[in-house]
Length: 358
Figure 1 (cartoon, one colour):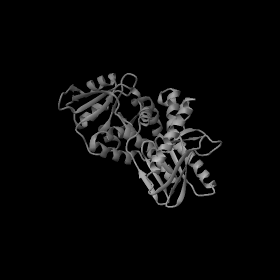
Figure 2: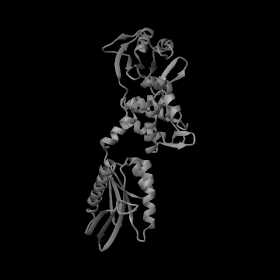
Figure 3: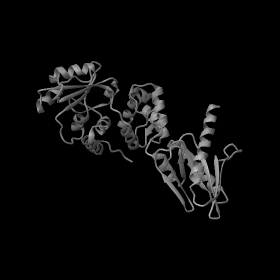
Figure 4: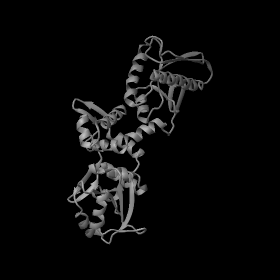
């Protein structure tokens, strides 16, 4: 009952949004917007008639509570089929609370006008044309993206991005990412709704890893942890020799080169005088003793972030014997938030290590 009430409210808001745009048509002689969704087996929700310059134009609109690409595509097919069955030309319009850039692109691909309740719109018929874009995302969309990129969900995404073309069963992916079946199911649904993933007979696989990584980069927040600055007298080859003596990642301590330091091993792009590490508490002690670290309030040349959530250590790589780094995906995300130089290094890393077949 509540779900139906919400849909009725959205349809009313959609009718109001369509009416406001049509009121901008020059020299309007007559304007009518009717909600016909509840009338029998109507295939559309709204029908609008607008008369100007002595001619009547009809628009038919489908209203959905979700503007995720998977739902949009199905609605667009339905709209196009309905429009083609009409004896007179009609303009199909898709309306939802929010339409992402991907969803808007789908509408253009199918040549269907669109309006969302955030202010995005593209509508053209006869001599009338309107196109509007807003940069902001609504609160529910931002909340959903934050949920998708939270630490436990991020474990699933990092695992899938290692092998985008690999199809995963839910249980198999839950085990590989060390998360619950419920977490995997939620991530799976979000990826399918956004058309970043598809289903095959063997499970779910990433069909658009670039779009996923782009959105993750834009919404990325560095992992929560305690940032500590240190100084070491070791430099160059002596530092590298000592670093390779760090214990292998185990349950008794994890360390990994991060940010610019990881990039230096994965896709070198200019050196930095500071070494960056992620570690857990036990790993921090290994770093202190192996690299001879002393606390530094200024002049630090080693930065260690002691992470609260250990999932990131499930996705490390070893580009050379004894060298543990954050994965290319994690390194790319961290660099993207490290200023202009970091963004340049991130772009270089992506070009070198994160190219997938299209």
